Length: 193
Image (tube, rainbow, N blue to C red; front, side, top):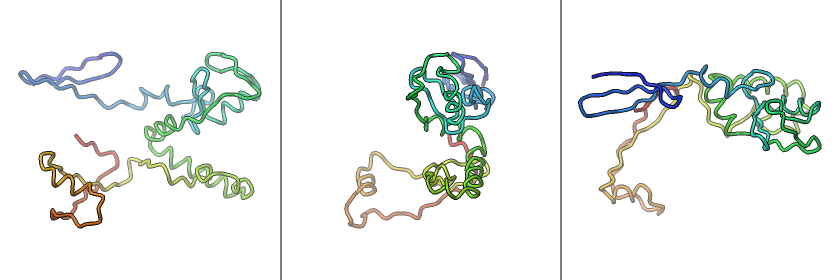
């Protein structure tokens, strides 16, 4: 076996060669390598409520860009003019989910901060959404310390009866006897290859 490391189009890969077989296995990306893409250029912190300017697609923390646009009417990165009366900015949930999933513990800490903030301010809490109050239940974000349980099942694609019985919408009991399902309990950061 021969292991070599190549840099191809800014992506690190490890190439393993054994006789005629060749497999490319991507290496784990370090947080420092993507840090620039997930930090706000204004506050230099990780994005919180990531918001993107539609005209130029630059992203910022929501509070940072709103404060900036109250004083100046251009993008802080590219200086493109923005309508100050009605700025065209949008919450970027996809980017925010990426930040929360890449930075361990950030989601939990942010939710705790929001709960503490609104606990001392019952008036504004009544107008806030559950996510703004730190009561978010829709997002599934695990920290590395969390333990998850999952089940792996084998489906024989050549056996049409077993597949159709599992995906049947009828209320009839399946004709194939189901075995007891086993769950694996492991850390949330487990790799499955």
